[in-house]
Length: 123
Image (cartoon, rainbow, N blue to C red; front, side, top):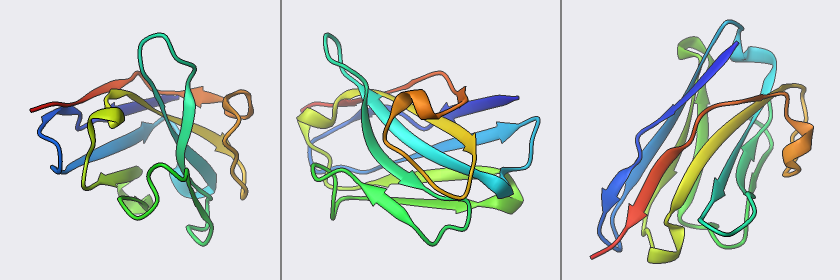
């Protein structure tokens, strides 16, 4: 079971990035996915979640209206579209998975984690 997060990079304030979380070793169909981020010296925090049905999603207040989570089960991939990026969005972004039709912002709820992909927002 592997999760691979990708798509990070350096972007100017106001710019956009799309992160991808591609899973292998299991079918994404029945898994909830959470996106988290962690800046140096801070705790990992929940950014966005999507349940297995794609009906229910969650966004932290600090990304509402700017980020959009979606999934393509056929490609075993979940996306995080990030628009209007701010310097405070700079962090390593992680995706996590759990076999469930719910979701959570609790890092301990998830069973599988990908490695982080770095997002740096700077002029």
